[in-house]
Image (cartoon, rainbow, N blue to C red; front, side, top):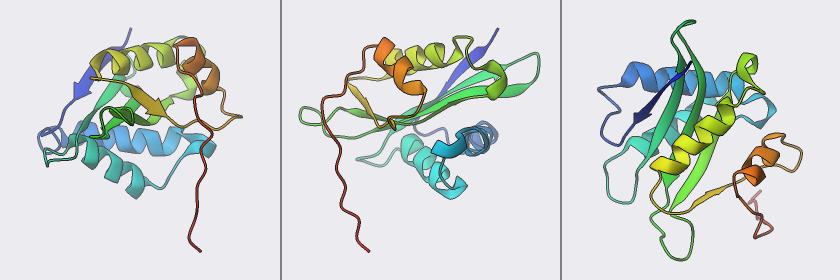
Length: 150
């Protein structure tokens, strides 16, 4: 039903149209959990960079019948193996028309299979995706605290 493609570091220019489609998709479908398009693009550029200390990948679910992005994930490598998980799931979204049909689970499994090492993610307590992450084995080990400079 869906075609899953992985976009790897070094493929930013050669697959620009696909990257742009993922960034646009995430901007539109992250709903209240979203960020500005420029920030999503920075995340994609980080994931696809070949510079030392950067990296990651993008997984895109494509609906060939409707010729549209159905879901997407961006994983950034942290470069901190051992004391912080090696990967950070920064963005995941599923098109509203495909929610509740297992696509989120399939996207997560694709990302988990592709990632080398552990994966961390941040999820707000009221985000319905929290239950998907728990079902896939993610646990809440820490309470995150932030200091914001005013």
